[in-house]
Image (cartoon, rainbow, N blue to C red; front, top):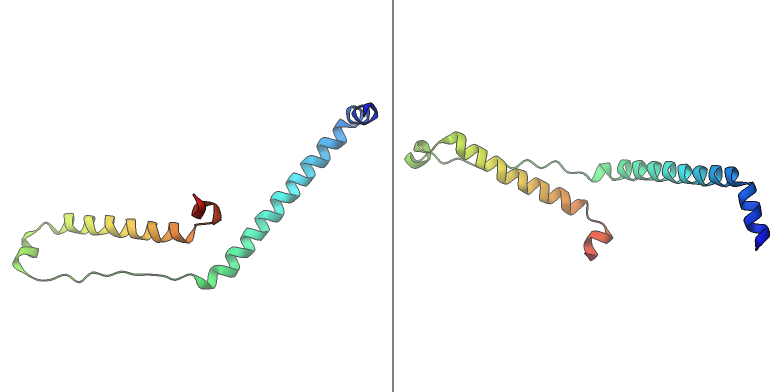
Length: 96
């Protein structure tokens, strides 16, 4: 037991170099895997465009169309964000 600690003290630089090398290799492999996964899932992406018809009644013409447009954009932004977050769920998020 004492010999092992003595060896660790004598070769601490090599141990740190190996640990950093393993960490860097892990990060690089993980990054390549995620890029490969994104590229393979790229064909499954869908572009969604939501349009809302506007009625031409007097009430609609009297309303402030700029305010109505901003409210519609805010609702659609929330919808797109919710759809994006559903796609980003992983096992850990589903458990919690």
